[in-house]
Amino acid sequence: MSRKQFRDLADPETARETIASLDLAPEPTEVPLREARGRVLASRIDAELDVPGFDRASVDGYAVRAADTFGADEADPAELELAGAVHAGVEPSVEVAIGECVEVSTGAVVPPGADAVVMVERTDEDAGVVSVRTALAPGDGVMFAGADVAAGERALGPGTVLTPREIGLLSALGVDSVPVRGQPTVGIISTGDELVRPGGDLDSSAGEIYDVNSYTIATAVEAAGGEARLYPHAGDDYEAMESVLREAADDCDLVLSSGSTSASAVDVIYRVIEDTGELLLHGVAVKPGKPMLVGRIADSAYIGLPGYPVSALTIFRTFVAPAVREAAGLPEPETATVSGEMAVRERYSEGRQRYMPAGLVADGDGTTLVYPVDKGSGATTSLVEADGVVSVPPDVEYLDAGERVTVHLFSPDVRPPALFGAGEDDPALSRLLDRVDRPRHLGVGSRQGRRRLRDGVTDIAVVTGDADIDGAVTLGGWRRQWGLVVPAGNPDDVSDLSDLVDRELRFVNRTTDSGLRGTLETALESLAADRDRDVAGLFSDIDGFGLAVRAHESPARKVRSGDADAGLGLRATAEKLGLGFVPCGTEQVQVLADASRTGKDGVEAFRQALDDLPAVAGSLPGYDS
Ligand SMILES: Nc1nc2c(c(=O)[nH]1)N[C@H]1C(S)=C(S)[C@@H](COP(=O)(O)OP(=O)(O)OC[C@H]3O[C@@H](n4cnc5c(N)ncnc54)[C@H](O)[C@@H]3O)O[C@H]1N2
Ligand code: MOO
Image 1 (cartoon, rainbow, N blue to C red):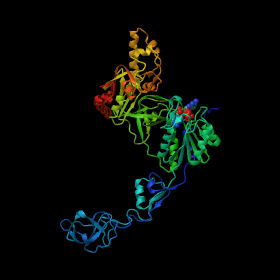
Image 2 (image 1 turned 135 degrees about the horizontal axis):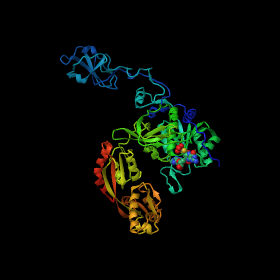
Image 3 (image 1 turned 180 degrees about the horizontal axis):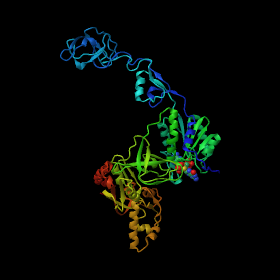
């Protein structure tokens, strides 16, 4: 089977122009006013009536002839005869003659003869005579007919985005349905045999994954003013893709697929487009998102997003969302940028325009630091753990530490974390972070945590083992019991670490970045010394010593699923998952803070949260404050 090769990549501007040349805009439509929020008026609306439709009392009080109150004040009130009353929603049956007044409530029709309304607070009434303690000018206390909007006036123009304010005006005009721009219908098709919709059962051993793109792109379409339609995901074969694409093209203004854009033998979607429609572009010099496609199928526009979730969403945000907004008649949203200094040096030399996900953190002086958050295009956390994107031109090979860069925030209301930490992923830490406003913690293990603290990226590091870092102070810490997580009831009768070495047990380790791995190795080193053996040989006697998983619960989960006999873990994890536990020792977890950042509100808040440590540790088996 032939494979796609990416030799000539289009530049981003060409991609933008090609997408702009597609026609996504649907016909205008009419919607009930009640459902019109966020829609865009398709044509002008003129007032068909005066609002208010009558001279309306704006206060509770008495309708008067202003001339009758001339010269009145507290010392010398005007005395008027009470001729009757008019309430809101009732046609007046009295007139105000010279020397008279009529009681009115707010919103009532001002009765004939009157030209002003005095507030009840400035009057006294006694036996049918009202003393008015202030002088009024004509129009005081009255909203005249048509003063809000007059019949024939231009009320709202085409292109107006309908918010509650405009819906208020249209309600006042009695309009109950409005002509609006159509919302482009966008068909969403994820491709790939491996995909399962969230909620379905997942067989990870068969390489199945949850479908991230369908809901992500559907919600992004809606946020851009389109109407998303989800189609069942298409398997990795030509016929399946062709039939779903045709079906979606029949129904929608734009079809968006994800996946199958690249170079593998099953990445055939470009051929389906070539055969059933028109392929206008394949491959753009951007990162992420290089293999995107643009084309047409029947009367519908088509854009192929790459399968990797970060690539798909970045391409959507950068190239597709503006076209959807344009078709829906929506203005480009307010964007916000923040300027900051690169916290670390970042190398890059692929010659493509890069949209680098970046996080923000304030250092001790309040300087904004920017750090790359790139866990790769396949990691959804690459975007969740970032605050925005730095656009790096194709000819830039690296960004130096300290270099000034501009971050385009994901939205203007993005606020950087108040507390930024990295290191151990730990259940006590998770509970403590819940007590802090806007924390961000990267569970990258002790080693990486120390490195980021040393590099001046994070405010705190949560580590086991070596806690001696220049310029760092200890905020607090706790002890946790570690050992071997085994199946419930410990069926293999595992009693200590030597069983891993001496018996045929399938073990699951943690990665070398994790503190627990360091603690295990230290314990095994002393076992090797007791036995007068070389430590590497001891490690190699353990079946699975090299089988390392990143997350702190993962070894225990492998034990629970029957894929391992013992895993490195904590007592707290074993008990949480209903598994057995063989204790091997306790280790100290320490929270270190960059000494120059202890004045930050978030760091101070975390220090206060540490006061709750006895309660937190008391709720976790094997924990001690
Ligand atoms: N030999 C080459 N390999 C790749 C190249 C290349 O130029 N040569 N390009 C890489 C780049 S860049 C990208 S981006 C991806 C694009 O891949 P596809 O669009 O073909 O997407 P798939 O292969 O179908 O999937 C990639 C990846 O993403 C996962 N995926 C797909 N759809 C979803 C979804 N709806 N939800 C969650 N995850 C999804 C899929 O399982 C794969 O892991 O190709 C590189 N390879
Ligand atoms: O273009 Mo791919 O999106 O670099 O990951």
